[in-house]
Structure formats: C-alpha cells, structure tokens
Image (cartoon, rainbow, N blue to C red; front, side):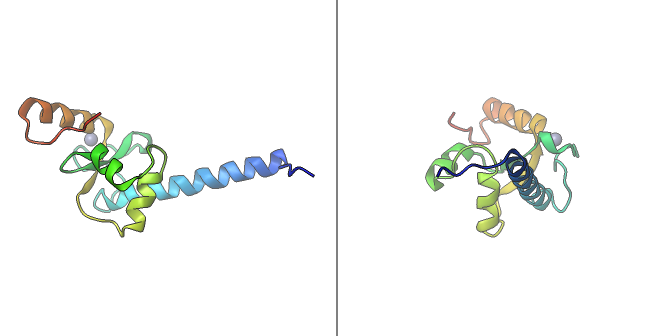
Length: 114
Ligand SMILES: [Zn+2]
C-alpha cells in the first residue's frame, strides 16, 4: 500500500522546516553580525537581505572545495557544524555588491569565480 501523506501533515512539515531553516539563518547571521542580526557594514536588519560574506572572497571556490550544496541553508548548517569558524561576516546584499564592485575595481579582494 503506497504511503500517503495528508495535506494537513504536509502543511505541518513545511511549517516545521521553514521555521527550522529560519532559526538556523537567524543564529548564523546574528553570530557573524557580532551578536546583532544586522549587516556589519551599514546596519541593515531585514532578514531577507542579509547573507554571509567570505571576508577574503573566493566563496564559490570554497563551496566547491568543501562540497557544500548551493542554496538554501546548507552553508549555514555547515558553519554551525564547523563550530562557527572565523573568516565570515554578515553583510546585506547592497554591501555585498559594493564589496564585489570595489574588488573588481581595485583588485584588493579576490573575486568569486562565477
Ligand atoms: Zn549593508
């Protein structure tokens, strides 16, 4: 007999995983925001625009080396499992793009390879 999941159970599972993923994101972004859920450069604090920045760049290269799947909370979970390693910071997407642009212009921050 095929296993059938009720729509109620499906909705519960979705909510559970969304909450779990959000809690993971909030935990990591707060840790790398120096204890505050906000961009370390400008103070932006809206969760959807915050992300983890590799301070020395080469984030894509690092992801390939470690085999962390792209997207979702995979990278955030990896950071938790590694015990919150140094070398990362919370930046908003505006500051991420500004940093990327400055790196291209001045070559002082290695640019990502994608
Ligand atoms: Zn910012």
